[in-house]
Image 1 (cartoon, helix red, strand yellow):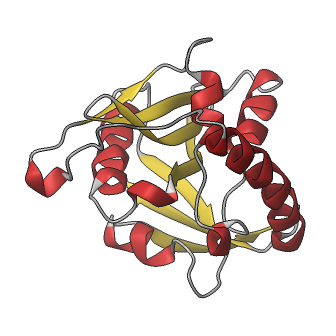
Image 2: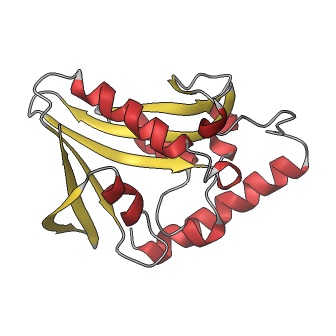
Length: 183
């Protein structure tokens, strides 16, 4: 899927999410504390009770071309047995979503999706959640690296991943830069 197609798809899902939020769904009465202020971050299983709320989480409109909506990720995960996904939770508030492709037979571990809702960016939740993902991957059989890819464009996640230690491999997959974090 091209970044333009992803952006159009995300806009449609964003409109649905905006309408649900306007109706009061997914409203947070007490915002989570920033990590620098002692906020805690966890990765939790997505359940039947939380899947809709996680689907309402979305990045800022100018970020739609960089990550698929969570609803799309759930649909893809239903047909991909290698998918491992979790909600990112800060102080018991849903703030994001992460999905790995886990292939223990190869072994190959790939950060397939990672997002923090636009309302919660800049609070340290992404950095903390990525640390938890990396710690999880380190426990998997034969894990020596974690792969990720990004769209090479202004405003994209490249600085975030580079700051976490990911280095480009030189490979480009469907227009995205592939990077590796050695574990």
